[in-house]
Image (cartoon, rainbow over all chains, first blue to last red; front, side, top):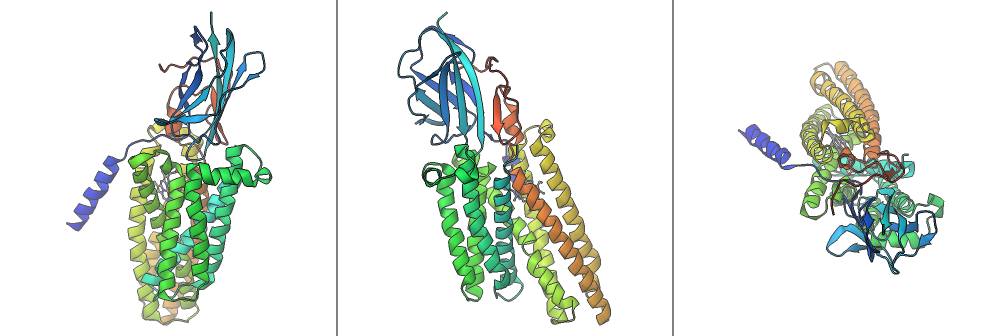
Length: 121
Length: 323
Ligand code: HEM
């Protein structure tokens, strides 16, 4: 009887468990990865697969074949700690831009990546 | 790329905590409560030093610098502004307290305190590992599961250290045979319960981190497979001890008893070696990206730093996910 109860308890514990997320991977971005937007974005928003550490995460923006463009400080969205936000202080002239990111997840692992988007046709 | 400083710090920290938790519980439940100060002090010192090393390794990885380039400002930022840091401030304080308690010449109370502190420290390790990433109440559940996984492993593997000492005395003809036999049988029973808990919590962990059979074909999956192979080896050794050698300790002839004690002592030493390998694999496992991470689609343009998912290709691949 005791063995049966133990087995039932063990079984229900295993049934309860289900997959979780891990390293912070980019899931969504505004502007979208590879997209073309009509007008300059006022901020960059990158949503990752898990909570990130703003103190050590970075977003940089550069004109495709040009120099870096200053962004506001990187912060997490107050409503969702998986989203990194950086303000774009000055409107971006039409052209192709590259966003590079380095995300440190809450379980201390680092991922990096980049993508481009285009402003104007 | 593997973050060897972090793997090393995790290995030393885990091993020291297993010895602290396992041998203090052994003292309490089996050996009359006297704390084995001979191991407790070095193990507590190793736990404290490796906690500092772990902090430096994480600071280096987070700030993208070499270990030598980690400065006070980076350490302050890690401790003050990250989830890891919030846990680790407590970890460092508890590790310091453990060292003080281990050095204290107390009796039973010392063992109780060391066990409680080591259990809290193992929970800290669970909190900064992959279990901590879910956040919220599910995260707490994962951390609890992982903490129990680590504590049960500690009861088993950490207990092998005082067990070997006991067998060494018995095999050299010292110690009272009935008391020794009683102690070994009690440990054996305790270890079986601990193994059951390790298997259960390990399987729960697997369900969280491995959401498809394909995930086995990752570095994480391969290291896990090695770890499980080693655990299987440990179970075989434990079965030999329990089923073959332990009954021989009941033998009437004292020469046969001592022979069995020598054989038991040797397999326990061998078990310790395999346990060290299991802990090495487990230390590595916690730094590799588990395959759940690799499962979502747009991975071609991102890279795990210090891991091995995807490759940093040119970033013209459109994202299939709508915003
Ligand atoms: C003597 C046996 C074992 C020992 C000493 C051991 C030890 C450990 C340690 C130290 C960790 C790392 C926890 C962390 O850093 O948060 C871990 C995690 C884990 N263990 Fe075990 N374990 C054992 C048996 C098992 C078994 C039998 C299974 C599977 C059924 C298992 C599955 C796992 C999984 C899936 C993880 C998560 C790995 C990760 O965080 O990426 N373990 N174990």
